[in-house]
Length: 298
Image (cartoon, helix red, strand yellow):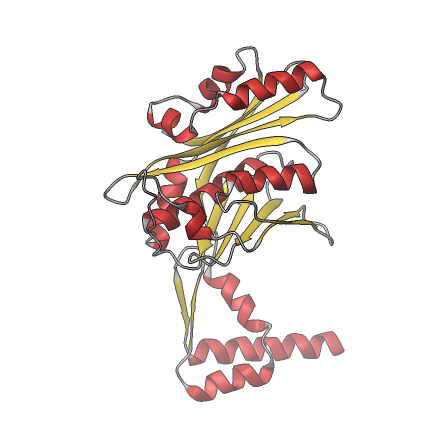
């Protein structure tokens, strides 16, 4: 079953709703980073919120970058979600596993609360839009709720979750974002409040087989479906990408690496793929760099 985000509106366009199924995408992230349950839940919740935000981007290469650091055991969580549905992310410490007394994963303890949530909107322009808010709970859904309200002045309810099997694999992942549009009427506000008060965990619904559209109609039966976006785990790193990264180093740094004779090994922080450049590769990079420098001066 493919992962997807469904976008809808309700009550004369005064309410906007996004529902996401992210199970496969989050499971691939868990595998890539060898995540323990709490780390998987924290990373997966952040991926879901960022992917939903990116589903509103107009161009495929535009992206949302979400960074959370609550100074908890998990460290930094960074997610990139593109307009074409590609999502990738990493968590500094993937080995965290905390459970509350009720048996649920303790994501707040994993993430911490003494820090910030930063959201960057990269529209492919010279400047990017960036919003930063203090973490409210470390549960991530509540933190994105606060971000939308404070930084984007959009009253929102954000419910994101990850259900992890005892064997560590992801059973269900996804979420729901309900937002009031500007100048929403009191009737729309009341309708939203009732929907939010009756929300069930998105992971329960996904694990029971409900589709994103069915989840939306559960709370807004007359919602107008505007469209859907496929979502997938995709890093997009390549040897050429890291070759270019090496070419921006100072000549002296490249010379030192060449003299050392050990080459350069670069591991992608998002997917764990490793790229090795031997001494001859580094010499070629340095020679091409110097040739380009000479050409730019001529």
